[in-house]
Image (tube, rainbow, N blue to C red; front, side, top):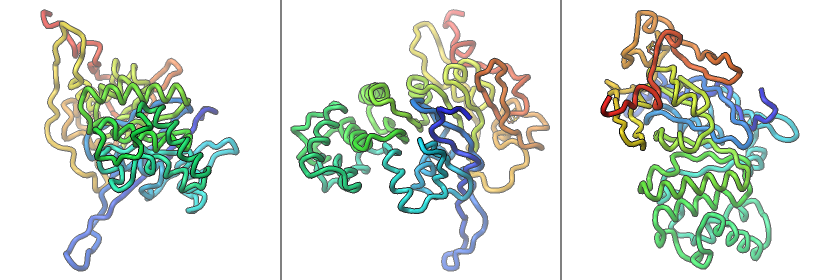
Length: 348
Ligand code: SF4
């Protein structure tokens, strides 16, 4: 593992019980929301975690901070004093480590306490960790509000006085105030208008450069991930099905699910039209031991082996970079990326 690795998930799992009966609540099985996910994030990198609703991406992000307790697996944080398994920390150790790991939530309306002023919201993490005097905390809150593009003179107001984009900036200021090393951003722009999305994305990019932040960016929107992320991981039904550098993944997808997702990404180039593939059926909650590939019921390339054997996540790159895929037929399929045949000249 690279010496610059900051965070690693190793065989991370989260199973939720399915209960039956109105009174006895008997356990009838498990929903495998996340089923053996492994990846690493390097210092200063922005990693995108994408997939459709219910694929387990938000659960994975929350497990990294132990907002949700994992069923199994390790979460290794590479501290200056050595690796620490977050999954094994007691409450006090976890509390101390969380200073360096912060989260930006999806909904800027429900993630801010409506009864607290902006100043109270932004400086609350300092108060909780007993950092600074009252005057120093106020000073720091003013400073960080300026960094995220908000005027500190409005910080005595309540969240309802702000627009969605401004509220998300308040959430970002709260996440930044402790000088974290890594920020897990869970769909941070999906609740915002498109014009505001671009502003918030540019702000996140600027902040990363300014503070050398590391980001895990969770999103269902591939065009946002393409714009922002160095590497992209794609999840389907609780498992990573493909991961690679973003440019490589968008140009040369190796998994049929990723090809379908990419076919729906709008392109800004004039003269191109879309060749969108429709994904038939729905991803159903993954409950049991799967026989074969979980994508097989929706895959237009599926062969007999796909219904019999579970594909492993395999490394496919031979040029020193990394491109891993979970597909039996990855070598033989010629899939279309966004830059190639999917976007053809409208006249051609
Ligand atoms: Fe499709 Fe088979 Fe590959 Fe699964 S293993 S993605 S069913 S081709």
